[in-house]
Length: 262
Image (cartoon, rainbow, N blue to C red; front, side, top):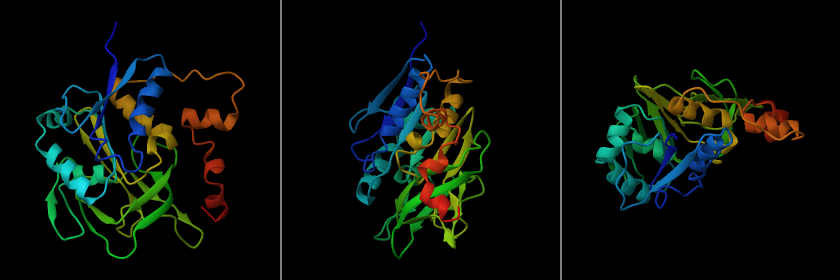
């Protein structure tokens, strides 16, 4: 009997402000729906980060919690080994900034990051970037629009060794979200490492519950080709499309945005 696929959830006590811990449950559940044993291993504040996990998940948090989490993870040998061997990793909001080269918090303190993603974040000034987002993916393996909810004040600039995850769609007469806040409508960042991919995004929701195709991309990086989902007969078409990650239900989920001109 093969070992279960382990989804490692990192520090949800401080990186769980927006319910992003749900991303780990989504990954484990989508494995089980395919007959693959999956489990969530929660790494708390006093726990060592294991190096042998199959997928790693980080969520969002406010400035003080983000600095604490970054200080804790920056020197983690287990996390470094996992990333160096190419374990696929999802990092949301504060998690994205932590995995970058550095981020600057509101009081002007510049905090060195883990340095896995070639991005740096600084305060954006003005109002926070809050609202629904629909974005077209810019990475191989994703051809379904991504959607979620952004709530952040930072501006994240990509360096030459990072690529954007997606580009925010324009809605009506203006942009349908800020994305990274750099004015070019780019959202998130990705960086290939070994056989896996590090994915950073500002999308909450949790993002993997709202974007099953992104969840399956991370799982494919971890375990290889996935068998199809076995869904009950008679399930409504929109529900089945959502669970399969085809994007056919995007109009149902974002009808108001589409009517506005997306």
